[in-house]
Image 1 (cartoon, helix red, strand yellow):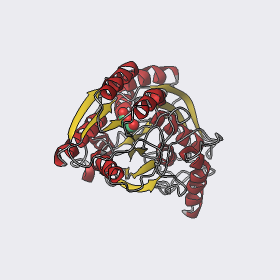
Image 2 (cartoon, rainbow, N blue to C red; image 1 turned 90 degrees about the vertical axis):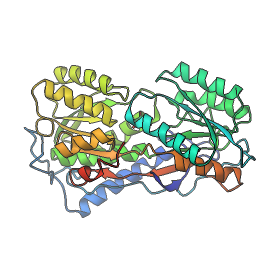
Image 3 (cartoon, protein in one colour; image 1 turned 30 degrees about the horizontal axis):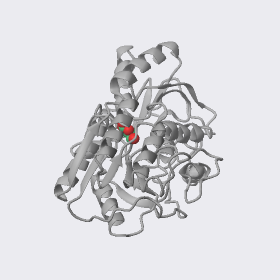
Length: 383
Ligand code: AHR
């Protein structure tokens, strides 16, 4: 279950002037990068990668401050985040009928999120309607339009990409309080605290930075990396790429040699990795934006007779059960947690809003890191 550590609003591109009433999480990236560097310097690291696990052919690069650095952990909560004052109000506190537009049910993460929402609704005696967009953006737009027509008291949306902003705005214009879960939308179209109440999510840029430190440590700061991106246009894909790519600029021995969309699925992760491993035989590492793609990639590595964790180091994000098993087995070097258990925080935030308590326009979850030191102990608790 995520612990809420920070309150804010929606990520935007670096250098963009935030809209009034909006805090840009992406603007914190340079500070987080500096934090990573200072932690590593304090730790006296630089080329201190785990030699046992360093990918074959990769010697430690003493100039890479990320290698062997401590996990930078969760980002600091942005302090100047406004409250949702102009969004549609929710005055009902009992007999609530709410809806949840889920974007897909094609991986354990999505299934765990939906289960968490259903469990919490049941616990609280709230009627919950769930739709599944089947990883199809036009279906999710149609789903949300159908839900708007049903006039729910509140609407939770896990948007497939940032382009869902228009339909989010439509829901707000229909007077429905909207709560975004796990992914954000384009805030230049749908304004946080006005068109929707808030977005509850992990700090995806920080996840990318944390993954970069693990990758640097696994490879001693020398890596030719294949990057498997999440669904194009999805905020975690945009931010996990930014966090990781920015962080590895600290290390001249680490380069992303190719980066391609693996759609957050195991099957696509595997097929894309198969192709990229062939076209980039020099690759020594794979950074996958989620565990499912990493697991597909690990299968692809094995299929060409290479050994994950030895010839090719793999790092990813999520912390699902199979991911933790892969870490315990040594196939996956580490996975940065991104908890899907949104039910308790989603419904608590909705209740706070209904009772008139101030609700910030961005709520950031706190996540842990899974490595060989703690993966086995967490397998049973994982989804
Ligand atoms: O938005 C969160 C991401 O979406 C998770 O990392 C991934 O597994 C899911 O599909």
